Image (cartoon, rainbow, N blue to C red; front, side):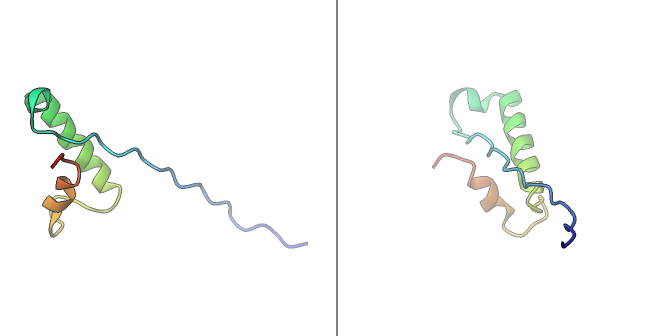
Length: 65
């Protein structure tokens, strides 16, 4: 009988941050800061930070139009 290898932890799929509309309540400072923090944290889990080339495109993916 073969021995089992090390158990692997299942990858957790993180929910994507909400999209930023640029209108209404989204423009309130607290909501804008929260959106930025959530997107930055989400991107960091994928090894993308504010120094990554073309990072603005990644943030843009979480905006509406």
